Image (tube, rainbow, N blue to C red; front, side, top):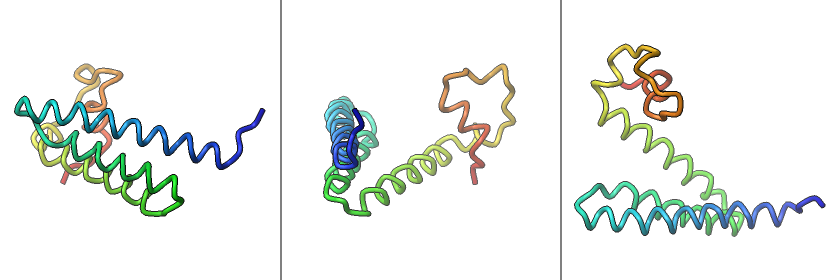
Length: 108
C-alpha cells in the first residue's frame, strides 16, 4: 500500500508541527528556569514551518533552511575557540553532533 503525495505531505507537516510543540513547550520550561530562548524560537519556527508546509507554501522550506543556517551560525559564534582548535579523533564521540560540526563546519 503506497502513500499518496497528499498523505506524505500531511504526515511531514504533522511531524514538523509536533516537534515544534515539543520544543516550544520544553523550551518555555527551560527559559523559565533561566535557560536560553533558543528552543522556544526553534519550536516556533517548526510550528510555523509545519503549518506552511501543509498549505503548500514555499516559505516552509525557506524558514526551515533559515533555522538550520541560524543554528550553525549560532553554534560557530558560541564555540569559536572550539572550532578553531584542531580536533583529534580521540576527542570526538561518534554520536556527537558537536564533534561532527567542529570537524566539518568551517567557523568564521
